[in-house]
Every structure is written in C-alpha cells, then in structure tokens.
Length: 207
Image (cartoon, rainbow, N blue to C red):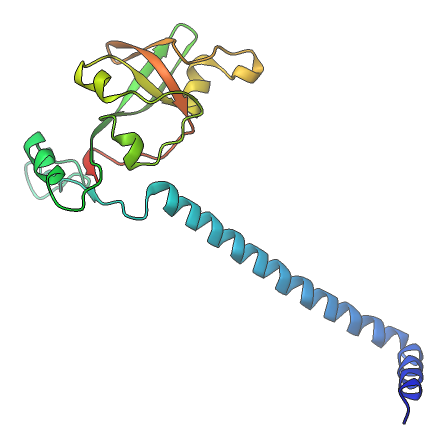
C-alpha cells in the first residue's frame, strides 16, 4: 500500500468518527500539557531550593548553644542557653579550613525613627557577617572591621524594616541610608539597607 493510500485511509477514519477523534486529540493535548507543566514546576522548585542553598552558603556551619533548663523538667527552646563565649569564638576561628566566622547575638527589639517604628529581630555581629552569609547590599555599604573595632553605632537594615520605619522610597518615603534609628535605647545611623533575610536564633557562630 502506498503512503498516499495510507494517508487517505487515516483521514477517512478520522472524519468518519469526528467526536471520538476530537476526544482522542483532546486527551493527547491535555496529557502533553500536564507533563510539560509538571516538569516546569519541578524545575522551578529545584532552582528555588538551589538558590536558597547558594545564598546561605553550601559550606555554612552554624554552632548554637543547647537548651536552657529552668527549675523542674521544663526546657526552653534550642539555642536559648548562653554557654558560648568569645574564647570559644576565637578558638573556632583558629581551626583549619575556616574561611570566615561571624559571632551573632540576636533578640527582638523596637526599631524607632522619627518617621515610624517596628518590632524586629536584631542581630549583633561583626563585619565578617557579610562574607559568611553572602549578603547582597541594595543601597549603601556593610559596616567595616574598623567600625566594628571602634564600636561605631551603625546599622544595616533589611528591606522590610527600612520600609516599615522610613516608608517606601518609590512612594515618597525617606531614603534610609544615613538616617538615625533607635534600637532599644541606642541611637545608630543606618549605613545601608539590604533585602530581608531570615536570621538564626539566639547566640550562634556561623563559619
């Protein structure tokens, strides 16, 4: 049988049963579209997870204290103990293959400026935090080792905190860089702001 005869026979079969042929075609189209959609969703999830791991650092190790125990059998949340000291931090920094280490002490405080205020997590750390956490600055610069050594009162704001306290710059708010904010009872100039990132709890050392 010639190819042309086979083609004509196929066309006659399709046109003779239009409803069945249409449903068959619809099923094939839906099946292919579903497979493509699932592959796209899977690839998107993979890219998102990979991006988060890369932003945090694939070689990131966090050292946290254990539980603190009150009177009786009740234990507080993990990381609530205060057993880590600066001597521990200095000892870890001397270990082989440690590229950078950033001690952190976190807590929730009120950040206040003339234009607004918000309750947020505050991270007290060193200049090496920028390297350890691959921080990307949107405006301004991260504080330096010199500022850290001199105990300068400077702050780096997350984008959400900057928006809550100073308003959105695109909507007429104040540019947060160089503005003064008060955290608890300490006033500090805002040296920069960056995209908001999740921070670890209590006292930790990240290397």
